[in-house]
Length: 523
Ligand code: HXC
Image: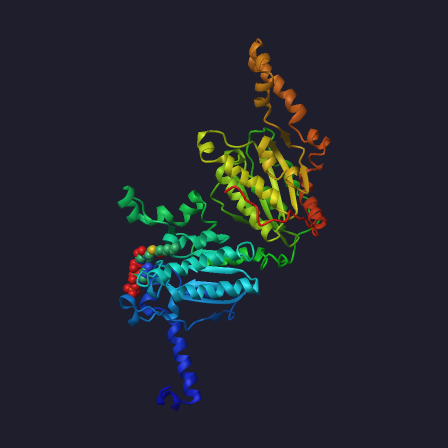
């Protein structure tokens, strides 16, 4: 210990500490901060200030420094090693977070940067609290080399260990390239900011040199590309503030961990509310679309829904709502897109959502209006068999309360896939407009009455007559109800009341599965 140090008074030591603290908290300095703002991005600290309740953020490992001597790093100080980690309160509940600081060495991830992230992830898992990552980074710190890769590996491992145990959210608020994309991909929810964020495995330059394709950063991996085309992004946001606000909103639906109770919000909506608007929502003509989201809004407390992956696989809707203040997960076919048919992407979207809800004890409400699986080589070769199986698997393995409402079509295998009774639904109810059948009337008649139709003087008229008779017999809810395949037929207006009563009755539901290591979901 130097004489100088020994001579310092307590007050001097505290002053030193305060100066060091301020220096580290100044991040990459004014110039870099100004550059960040010019790009319409907030700094990591500004983001954390917006995310957490005022003055609740507790920083962890502010003084950590890199220890690399390579490529000039021995002479380079990187405040906080480019990532700010800690925990605080969001709407009064503890959440852990790591925010990469692009103003210091581009938020690049080296050994110690990664270890800071490991530390808060370990703390979040030990404390059984959600973890939020705010990503804004040039990727692996190139000067440090392989320790950076080790760093990513340790993050992926923790993402996986924490999966299904604590909710994990990643917001992409700047670049995320190469293998760095896999921590977000392993998290439960990926938020992206329009215009300032992008994610890809290989960037435009590599793509051009390897396969000659020209594409911009945004087109390739911007928020809209991942929200509408790849399905990687769950929530698109307008800017940093909007992104952080939406993360808070999502967290308000989620429990702290798989062992924690669901959050209970004050409910200002009525238990007795009758949804008369639902009595007129199904068009008289069976091939007309209607707005399934209106149904979900009618059922939800105060019409409030938080939709996930709104722009991708739009033929299915997945969303969180509250029923009498408690979270429920909704899965619904969307007749406005491809008649609500099931395809590869819709199966993936719904299955992942169902598994999240089941892992965190969130009851499942399914609204069925499905004409079948999408036919054609495109879907067969894309593996509709494999992907469609995920949906069957996800619903069957889920042990949370499962309630199904059939609003209109429930045909064939797709009917089974939308949480039918045999996949373990606790209660299946149908509106009087429901058509529960092995297939549509016309298709059925083409098979059953092929010769009769072909030999009729007017085949079209004969087919229409036979189809009407088939419809009368099977394309209604009464045949299924008579066999106990559905529990009840209800007036649409009573749906919310019925769901409230069912959720109340099922609140102590406990369902056991066979003792084994884990299921093998068809991936
Ligand atoms: C070290 C980095 C860095 C990196 C950025 N910086 N990325 N330092 N390693 N990966 C530094 C820059 O040198 C610069 O430092 C500061 O961050 C700001 O960067 P700029 O280039 O000035 O910013 P900008 O013009 O906005 O460009 C952003 C960028 C660009 C497009 C992200 O920085 C870039 O292309 N970075 C490299 C991306 C990359 O190839 N990453 C490695 C991928 S491999 P100074 O000191 O000048 O301020 C990888 C493998 C992961 O990530 C595998 C995981 C399994």
